[in-house]
Length: 213
Ligand code: ADP
Ligand code: MG
Ligand code: MG
Image (cartoon, rainbow, N blue to C red; front, side, top):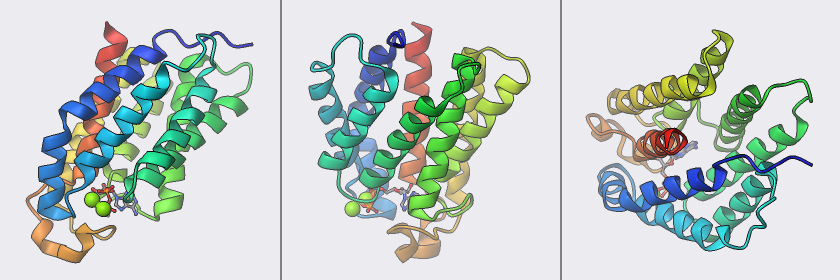
């Protein structure tokens, strides 16, 4: 039996608080380049997870927690990001479950994040450069992996992942949308950051900050 990951609950609560705080900003961003529902979708995800967190036994394993979050998001979040976040969390859980016993915890989380991003790409079909959340997720996963490979500890590797997500998110403002509703407005999206990529940069920074407390 695996002990509960210290601080996992605190991290989830911090991510939820961040998404609720960002609701209006994400709404405005998605109004500019999409259909304006991303703020509401992320807030629904946050409320759903916060409602559920109290029902978890203290010893719930991280993978089980991620699966529960995935089920909640699948149930309460519509739009495109609902199914994409649901598979992200599901694949992360599967990766944690399949981790080899000799793999150290930091590497397990990095591998789970990498598998999660691959799941989003598989389901949504977006590639880097298509101007989606993938443009924040992919560089973040790569930075996390290379940080650990270069011998940094998990907090330092997460720092570089946060920076990579922010850079990747900012770069979407010069990308022509090829996926999702933004693709309908085409070049008119130029000059605006993709809301889904921005959301990733925000929640990843919240995760990092919660780990530092
Ligand atoms: P919808 O466009 O269905 O209203 P949301 O508002 O929930 O979707 O989410 C929009 C965000 O989802 C976009 O800003 C983009 O980052 C991301 N997105 C859209 N389509 C895809 C896709 N095929 N793969 C990955 N991410 C995508
Ligand atoms: Mg939308
Ligand atoms: Mg929508």
